[in-house]
Structures are given as structure tokens and as C-alpha cells.
Length: 493
Image 1 (tube, helix red, strand yellow):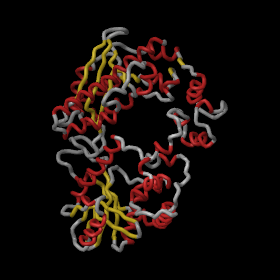
Image 2 (image 1 turned 60 degrees about the vertical axis):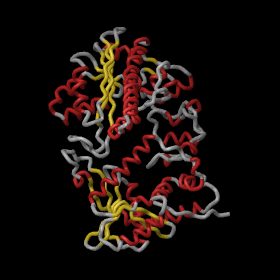
Image 3 (image 1 turned 30 degrees about the horizontal axis):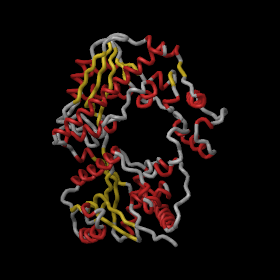
Image 4 (image 1 turned 135 degrees about the horizontal axis):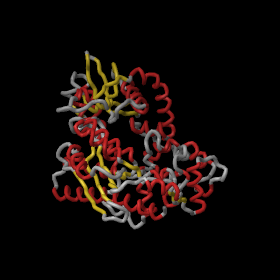
């Protein structure tokens, strides 16, 4: 028996555009969908807040968002009434032939309606053109005369100075001329999706590049359940084409890769280590790295958060804002280890108190050990640029930075337990299994960012203290991990 088709929304259309199977599962087997991660939910929340903020560009409107998703019919009814007026409409709803859409902002200019779709991004991406084309098709098919349709996005060149200037913060870009040529394809894709949804079986679609492009699919856990945790998809810097080439040939485990399959030298090293179960340790290169170190050593790690809308003067949308560091200091090999740390109060801009304390703690001589130096040095450069009075100090600090990641990224030290990765989250348990992030309440950088940003609106003193304790424990382990990893390198030199 044929299943009945269902209403296609903009989000469903985009999901189907990426993968018909994903759309089918979303409709008929939602229980198979992955749980929304904390970081993904934070992205959704930021997008919602940006949309609400953008409404202030078009003041005096009526917000129908409260009816979504519980009462679509009321949204359509209210939209029909408001469309006869002159005031802006937020989340206006339109339907046509089992298609429905909700447009972020409708504005009437010179008696004609203009539609705006708000995006928490800093450019107009190709996917936005497709979803805007879908909305345009539904709106004009429902009978509304639409003069123009635009995408509203964040201007990443805007630097806050005092109160937010919304007209500088947001860019409004007409996309009508770009989406009109897409309409025939939109209609064809809609027809295909409706036909697919009428079927009584899920589309037979294998995993492929579509699983993560343009968005990570929410059914990865289901569709990838037969792919082991460590597989050909974990080969370092192997192109997507080659990964799926191997997969389509029935090769999933590294041990099954033919010896003559074209791989880079580092990739071959990883595969051989897995096949032979042996570690690769280049003592000459490790010694070269260690002999260059200048004591005292300062093991340093930063934590940052990225407000989509700039919260502080001299900051831009999505700028990385430093709020915490951990610093372990070792005066000589096997010497006494000293720990210092900084965690800003979530009250105002943390960057000035951050850099002032760091300058005091970091000393004037000795190497500064970080893991992935591009991150820390970039943040220091930004602070020096935003606060020129500290530029000399940030430059001096950067000149002392040494990247502990180098011996691992260059495969001078590699073990099968690293599973192709040289991130500290993989290197630490491989080299120092007694240390682990698993038991920490906050155990990765994304969670740390979300946790600190949440403190700006938190009033529960107990929760504030617990979050701060968790942040300190996480960052402290990052630098202690570097200390212990360096010990292992010395032991194998």
C-alpha cells in the first residue's frame, strides 16, 4: 500500500536535496535520528537569536513565530489577514500544494512586499539560494505578489564600538536574480521528493559524500552503524574520493588495504602501523626537537568562545574571544612543576584581564609549549591588533612559541592507538593512558565555549561555581597532558 505524502517544508526540502533517504527516515522513522549534540543545539539557538535581532531592522511588525510548529493553520490565517496591511510580518506562513514555508521577515515598500530570510552566517552560501528559491516558489504559487527576496546575514567586517549598529552589523542582499534560474529545478526536485515519499520502502542509498555535505546528516548513527569506529575513513588527510573508492570496493578496515594502493608516505605509515601493530618512533627527529627546547618551559593552552553577535567593543561577529588559560611551568627537565591559571569573570570583555595576567605569568625567557600553535598565536595577534598597547608583548610571546604537535603531525612518533589522529585527545590516551578526559564534566573545547558563554546569563551561584570548576579542571588537564607527553618523548629519545 502506498504511503500518503506529507507536507514539504523548507527544511525538509533541503534535507531531501542532500539525500532522499535522510528525508524518508525523517518522515517515517524519526526514532532512528541521532540526538542533537550540545554544540549543534547551541548553533540552532544562535541562529534563532540572530533572527530575532534582525527583526529590529524592520520595526513595528507582528511576530507569528509563537504559533510555529504547533498551529500552522493559525499562522496561515494570520498571514492572510496581515498581508492586507502595511506593517512588517515576522514568520509569515504560506502553503501551496502540500508545500509550506515560513519566511523570517516580510516588509512592504511602496505598496509591494519584500521577503527576507535571516542566516547566522557571514555570506550567502549556495544552500541558502536553494532554500530561498523553495520559499519563493511557495510564496508566489500561493498567490502573493513578491517584488523581491533577500538574504540577511552578518557582516564579518563590522567592529563594535558602543551600542550595536544593526544596519552595519547586518548585510541585506537581494538574491532574486540568482534564484529565478533555479525554480525549474526546484519544481522538479519537489516532484521527485513527493514521489519518493509515497513509496512504502526507504530509498536504497549507500553512504557517501552527501552524508556530510552541506550539513552533517542527522541519521549518521543509523546509516554508518556497520562502519567500525576506526576504519579507512580515519586515514589522515586521505581525500574523500579515495575513502569512498575503497569503501565501494568493500575495503573498510585498514588491514584490508592492498599494499600497492596509492597513499602518501604518512598514510602508508599509518596503514603499516595498523597492519603490523607496531609503533613508529624516529629517535633522530625527536632528539632534534627536544634539543632545541629552551628552559624554563611554559606549557600553555587557551580557551575561547565565539559570540555570533559581537558582545564587546573592538570585536567582530564570530571572533574568537580568549577567556581562559592554563599554564604549567617547568624550570628544568625533571624539575618542580608549577601551575598557574586564569579564568575571567563572565561580566564584561575578558580579553584585557586575560592578556594582563598572561604577561605577568609567562615570564621573559624560555620556550612556550602549545599544541597546535596556529590557534594560540592567532589569538595573541588578534589581541595585539585590537589592543595596540599590548602588541609588543603579544609579538614577544609569539616568538617563543613551540608546537608540541609537530613530532606527531609529522609522524616522527606514531602508535596504532592514535588511530590516524595527532590531536591531543588521541595522543594523550595513546601515550599516557592513566590520564583521561572521559571523566570530566567538560571534556572538549566546544563544550567549554558554550559553558563560559552561558555564564553571562546565569544567576544560580551554585551552577556558576560548578561550571567554573569544570572549566578550570578541563583546561588544566590540557597543559598537564603536554607535560606528560613531553616526558614520553624524552623517554624515547
